[in-house]
Image (cartoon, rainbow, N blue to C red; front, side, top):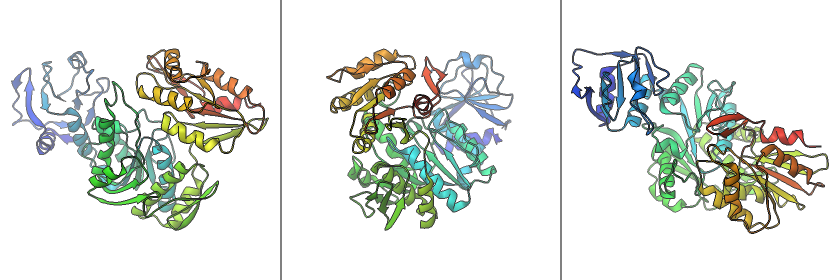
Length: 478
């Protein structure tokens, strides 16, 4: 619960309070200290003591008109006969009030957050497994793919980083469940939309940066995307940064907290030992996920876990046991050809995935990929130009969460950057079946990129059931 006076105090301390109005008239609260027993930003989820947040560019006065709520917080007085707590920034207000409403759960958890264009989920899995060895399975995780509040049961979150009300509610539930640590992915949108406003992480990790999520409904420019990513380090007590990433010198110049760097140009380089082992931190680590970028993710998790009290023995065990559903999963056809399933969804991650596969598969290699609709439009050119520069690859373009766009038009846009014949098969299952039927022996490979084990396609704003790339590939292995 939280009182009206506490809400106003929080807003004033953040220099975010303007007035309380009702239909344009000042509302006197001196004789009132209302107690709120719930918070909501969804007009379908309110009760008689709900403090409601009217947020978002699509919010309409009609959403408020029929609500039986005592107060709402907004940047606008919608004049619907309900007292409006007017603020400069409703999203900032929502985060700080949610934090207080749920009893500042961040104070009861050791928090570790990962950001980066790619690798967040894999690094989070490494960190969770390490910390679970360290703390006897008391690590919560908020991830793009799997979220757990009790360390045992998992569900898929709608957002990489939940809205602030949901975030702090989930954090408090994790504490009630006996969790001592929280590992989470923090997207650029989390800072763009103030989902983690006011939250300071014990450790913040910046894995890498490359152009992505640039478009009308995400980030207008790379500069904006990069700025939002860097906010994690500005809001962490300790930073871990990949010294091999683009713009590293600039990131280094901005750091104001204690930190550790990893990579070839740092005190923590990574050396390949064998296909499934590597050397770093004066240790040899066994690892199930191949590729140098996965070794980087493991070392980032290791340095973070050390900062949170883990021992090196915990780290070695955690890294060795880590697998990630839909990340660099390999299955084999009856003829010996290999099928690689991965979430690679932009040019940079796809390039790294292909470069892991090609040294081992010297026959025909087919790449199946698409790009999302209504976001990340810049990926289309990037992926097209990458595939154009790899003329020996067979390419099948297909659907990948087309949303409100025509998947055939998306595929044709990617194809416009490729100067050779490629295939467009919009039905993703048919595309996978076709590619597997075209292999002939153990030197061949099929790379299915983008959706991993996601059991849906986003079509016209709806999560439409889809078996998932791995399950479909397994269906046609023979």
